[in-house]
Amino acid sequence: MLTQTTIQNGTSLRPARFSAPALLLFGETIELMGASMSFGRNAEVYGEDEPADYLYKVVSGTVRTYKVLADGRRQIGAFYMPGDIFGLESSDQHTFSAEAVTESKVLVIKRSTIAALAERDIDVARQLWILTGRELRRVQDHILLLIKTAQERVAAFLLEMAERLPAGDRVELPMSRQDIADYLGLTIETVSRTFTHLENTAAIGLPSSRGIVLRNRNALGRLNG
Image 1 (cartoon, helix red, strand yellow):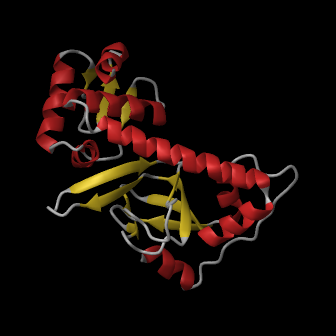
Image 2 (cartoon, one colour):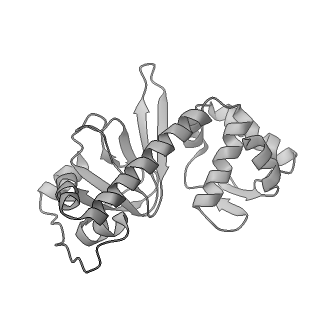
Image 3 (cartoon, helix red, strand yellow):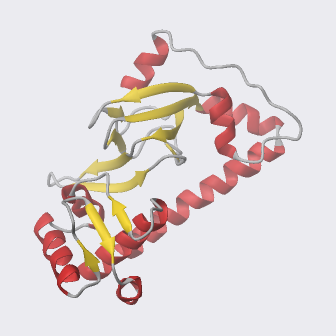
């Protein structure tokens, strides 16, 4: 595992510099205590079934978590963008692998350090609980997304990206259409056809392969239910 190897080979964790009142945001804890690591495009952050010894916060770039199914298909579980925290597990092993979609910078902190801090600091414990709840909600939302029609899935995805990558009505997607297909449980051909259909109905514009212009958010919202 690249993360563990790098840390074990000498990357040190910065000492905590907590001030009163206690931290209000869980992400600040990782910023104060985490070690910064860089990952190239498609580089592995951690692998499925590897020890879940660390938590991660995206500083720049985008990270995907995924699982390779028994038939060889890849199912992407989530995309994590700047400010997002990932690697939170209910067991001692990772259930998904994680890779950098683009060149990414990630802060890494030992899980045991966070757990020990949460035992002493009620605010950190509360933020950890909130983060756990949000991650559970994300998993539930993704499950519900996968039972929708192709148009509904793509519309929901575009609206989600527009919210997470706020830049007006134009969204520059960091992930490929294959990534989108693997996240939505569709084929890349279906994703491409759906994009074309949404463009033909003036719901979106496609100025480039990864550039999306949301021309009619209401229409996308109706498709999303």
